[in-house]
Length: 237
Ligand SMILES: *Cc1c(COP(=O)(O)O)cnc(C)c1O
Image 1 (cartoon, protein in one colour):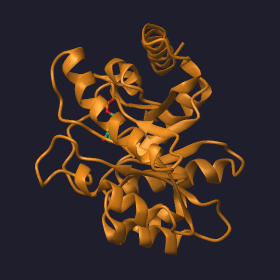
Image 2 (image 1 turned 90 degrees about the vertical axis):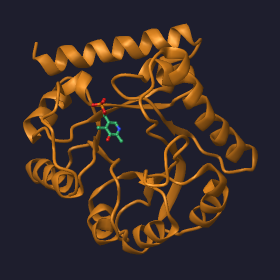
Image 3 (image 1 turned 180 degrees about the horizontal axis):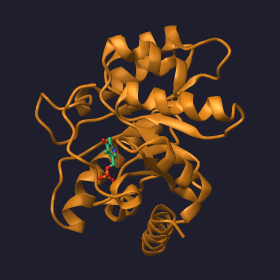
Image 4 (image 1 turned 180 degrees about the vertical axis):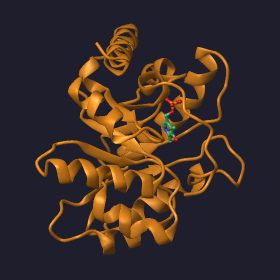
């Protein structure tokens, strides 16, 4: 068994355990494997171990992997999520190559993605990224501005609003982590009470996925616990 295969198995068991403790069905939590900084071979290994959904932070790097794997096999059923900060000048690449974008935090980007999504592809699946705890410099829409953004994004023709994503500042301890995630869950429930029909709450990473599952996450984004530790990377894309 490869390390990636063994790690994947452990992460799946961890999710199952967290679901059981929370009284939830493990089928209600999708595992997104975050392959940023790892090469296509790591993705192939994870796919061989049954993983189908992958996330990338850096647009150029992600598109190269997507194109490589699709050129090897055009029918490859992998699903690709863009989870990193989005710059306007990269939106076309994202709209043309990814299946999902989880990091939409302003209307202008959503409009560009909708305009640039090719007609031959299904609508781009979108989550709004919410900043529930950070300063003004952090990615994500402020909770006070979330409703207006959701109302403006939902009608755009070539994207489909699926839910919320958040990357809280790291805090120590299960209860503290869960408390932050529950704030996002509250916003999610509020939007659904207003009729949005969102089905995706993307919360939790390698260090806090258990608390995220306890708070109602439907998608955990896991990198290091599957692929190992990453080399430090300069910011930017
Ligand atoms: C890198 C990253 C992850 C995965 O983090 P790990 O700690 O490696 O599990 C998840 N979500 C986002 C937005 C990331 O940038």
